[in-house]
Amino acid sequence: MIPKKTKLKSREIEVPGDKSLSHRSVLFAALSKGKSKVTGFLEAEDPLNTMSAFAKLGLKVQKVKPGEYEFESPGKNKLVSPNVDLDFGNAGTGIRLSAGLICGLPGINATLTGDDSLKKRPMGRIIKPLSSMGASIVGLGEKETAPLKIEGKKLKGFRYESPIASAQVKSCLMLAAISSETDLEYSENILSRDHTENMFRFLGNKIEQISPLHFKIKPPYVLNGGEFRVPGDISSAAFFLVLGVLAKEGNLLIKNIGLNPARTGILTALQSMGAKIEIQNKRIECGEPVGDLKTYPSNLKNQIFQNL
Image (cartoon, rainbow, N blue to C red):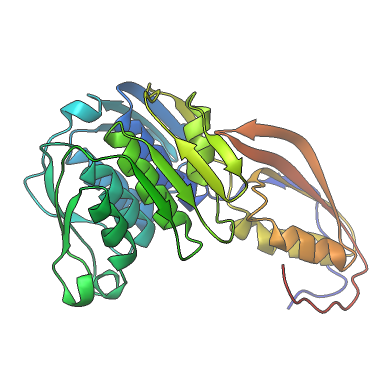
C-alpha cells in the first residue's frame, strides 16, 4: 500500500536491463566476428546462463563493470563444439533461441539442458520447424522435451506459417537461418514481439516486410561486432511509475526505459486512468524505441480493462 499523502523527493532513477534484449545481445555477439560491447546487461540467472553457454562455444567474455561486458567472437564459422552440456537453468528463451542458432552451425555438436522445470517445457514447437529446415535436433526427454541433442549442419531455405504467435519460435528460426546463411519466409496470425528483428536491423540487415505478419530474410547477412545498449525493463519500472503517480508531490524521472509497443501496456493502463506520465528524450537504441519516463502526481479514476 502507498499512503495517499506520500511526498517524494524529485530524483532520477534507473532500473535493471531488459532480459529479452540481454539474451539477444549475447547471441548476436557470438554470431558476429570481432569485438562487441554490451551495456545495461541484466545480470540475472537466465541471461548469464546464455552468456556462459556461448563462452563454452568459443565466445570470449570480459566483464568491465556491473552490467557492462566486452565480447570477442571468432565468427560463427569458427565457433567450437562444447565439451560439456550447455546448462540454461530455467531460461526458456535462452534454450530455444540458442537451439536455432546452433542447429545452423555445421560441425557443431551440443546438448542443451536446464533445470527440472525447463525440462518439462514444450520443445516440439521449435523441433518440428527446425527439422523441416534440415536440422538434426532431438528432444531426449519425454514428449520431445529437453535435453536437446543437436548436430549442427547447413540448413535449407524455409517458409513457415506459425500456428501460434511466439517470439521465441520466430526468433529461433531467424537465428537458424542467419547462422546457416539461408533464407527464411515467416508468417504468424497475431503479431509477436519483434526484438530479434530490431536487433537484426540494428546490425545493418534488411527485412522484406510483406505485411505486418509476414516477412522474408535472405543472405548475405551483415554480422560485424556492435555496441549493444540494453535499455531498462519497463516491467521493473512499473512499480516506480505507480509510486510516482500516486504520490502527493514530487516527480520521478525513470531513465533509459525500453518502449517497444509490445511492452508498454502499463503506460496505456495508467494513462487511461488519468496518470500524467511524460516521455522525454525519445530515441532508438539497439533498434528499439527508448525514452525517459517522468511521473507527476495524478488523480486516478477507476477503469475496466479488457484488452491491453
